[in-house]
Amino acid sequence: MSQAETPSSCLALDEDLLFEPHRIVEPSSWAGHVPFGAWLVAKHAPRRLVELGTHTGFSFSAFCQTVQTKGLDTECYAVDTWQGDEHAGRYSDTIFEELSAYHDKRYAGFSRLLRMTFDDALAYFSEGSVDLLHIDGLHTYDAVRHDFETWLPKLSDRGIVLFHDTNVRERGFGVWQLWEELSGRYPHIAFDHSNGLGVLLVGSEIGESVHALAKCYAERPAWVRGLFAQLGGRIENECEIRRLRPLNEARGRALEEREEMLILRDNAIAELQSALGRQERHANDLARQEEATRQQLEASRSSQQQLQRDHDELKQAFESLQQQHQQVLGSNSWKLTQPLRTLMSRLSNSRS
Ligand SMILES: C[S@@+](CC[C@H](N)C(=O)[O-])C[C@H]1O[C@@H](n2cnc3c(N)ncnc32)[C@H](O)[C@@H]1O
Image (cartoon, rainbow, N blue to C red; front, side, top):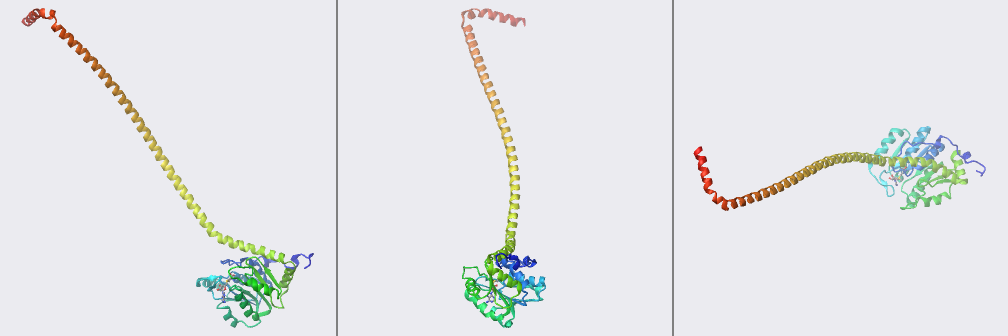
């Protein structure tokens, strides 16, 4: 493609670029490659597709869904022990049982899950019979090289090999190293997003659409990478949304519980406040009663003092009268008038 040519002249902008996967599961490290994987199956229309390493079936289900919706005449095979490995981790039988139930209900007419090692599966495929091979097993250099070399003879003259995790450089991953070696020997497309996907065009009879895209990639790699990274981003976002949904729901429930607790707390505060109001009124009543009692006490104390003063005055007056009386009794005039008083008393008695 010359600089004057538009990129769209090497890639039909049709519905094959807008694939919506039905099966979105964890792990979702392949999610960003779903649009390219579906586009590739639709355009390449492989007669036989083999996946080495399927796990929960994110990539394989996208391939099968494309075969079904496009009505392709493709045989699909997923090979896996469904036991896990040192990179994917070890997992239980429920992974296989769940995938198997999902897969058999929809795709059993053209697809098989082969529960065995990649090496054991070799015996069930004749040489030159595989149009599309997806290598996504153990990701050490030795393992992926072994998988490529043992399965290479099975590829047809239309053979294309996909390598996942070409852009992971940690935990002993070595796909990047093999990819560097192979991509110098075959036409290819390489994506960096979603841990990297290498697309190796091994056969000499690659169809027009894929060939055109590879040519376009050779001339404008950033444009092809950017396009499929953008398309893949939609699916990655969907995975992220699904991953966060339970967290959001849990957070929503926690918020609801918190709101209920706040309502309960507000009710308790309102009850405490009204109890406090009642207690304050009661305390005010008691204070008023205490004041009244104090005033009564004060009044009775001052009337008691008044009584005491009256009593003292009367006592003084009585004592003064007693003194006067004694003075009268002791006076000469009282003594001199004694016979007179006696006479008057007798007279008074005789009259009565
Ligand atoms: C990275 S996972 C596959 C991911 C899958 N393609 C997806 O879309 O999510 C690797 C799988 O390869 C399987 N595996 C690794 N080495 C294997 C071998 N030699 N034979 C069979 N299965 C193997 C593991 O059991 C594991 O399920």
